[in-house]
Image (cartoon, rainbow, N blue to C red; front, top):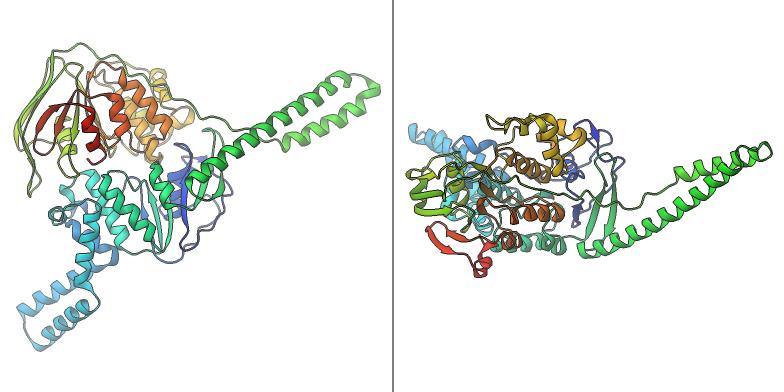
Length: 530
């Protein structure tokens, strides 16, 4: 499997049978998402082949819904998982033809089509689709809205509902719990427990992995320059963790013993190699060293530890931002209205609310990506805002990492390639990877790139929309550590309870009502539900 001209995984062979529940694990950048793209048919393998049998449902980490711009409703998109949308369209055309020319032929064609649709469960399917969408936290009223009016997180849940509704024999789900509140996540876990097909899943959600899988495929690729391999473990994720720890301890011990033996033999060669009488023996020992080198195992290597430091914010006024009377709707019901709040220098505002309450829409307005229908906001004196979008909308997927971060540098700030590469390197994005197209990155790597791009703006206000999505635990902790002591102001949307606790917000804005309160740990109970 090759990405960006680099071989990531070689000679991977495995079989997934019906009812198998398989977790794909490995560090950020190990190749998990790339493997899924090959399995899902989005990319072709460098060599070898993938044999698929039966229906195949693939949820990418960042799904792009082609019908998002054609006015199609959410429920129609979900129904398309079984092709029911086409049947509904056909029946509607027959109905119109019958009304325009109610002759016997048109009446018969419409009646036969409508009867066949009814007897095969077509009308009942919409109720099933709506129930499934409701389980994933999509309100019924939102299902009748065009997909284009939804937030990125809502679109992802609609796409997940479509894939589950399709009834595929195999499911490949890449981070399926992203953007799910606690109730929707519980519904999904219940669905996967009852699912009778084969499941392959990538997730940093330990609860999902522990409850939903019976096998683990570990992508063993310690560094960017290594070619990885797939190592299989039987059992739950917790059992895999214990078995992996035992394997790493065994490999570490074997690597030490091999290194000692090679060093001992090399000492013999160094001692006797120059002596004519011992030359033959030395040559024999050298051959033995060569054989040992070919059989040498490498002990487990800890991945790179990220050390992230956001630049000190420039001076600004006492008031960072003030919003009043803000309202937003997308061609349908109002999402939120009468939003009023202010934020002082160094303060942190946590935006809470159920899915669909307008959290992402609010941040997009503050970032200048869209505009409010009513009301307004203004930044304080010398305030500069940096925006992290949960769907990585600000990334140019056809550009390299280096070009993306270079484009993010504001006018008047001079940063050379060495400095830009240093910022990327803080997030573990280094070497030849900086010349790779950003569209080939994993979700975790895209998150790291987008966070690195915040570093160049000399911002004193950060707008962060789910900044820990797709990050492995060490990377998430590194980002948290960097922000804990950062003295600038932050407006944060997050489902990550531990991350929110560490950042210690000063205020809470409850959407869509607009209530503002001082933060206390009591609010943490609502974070995972938001």
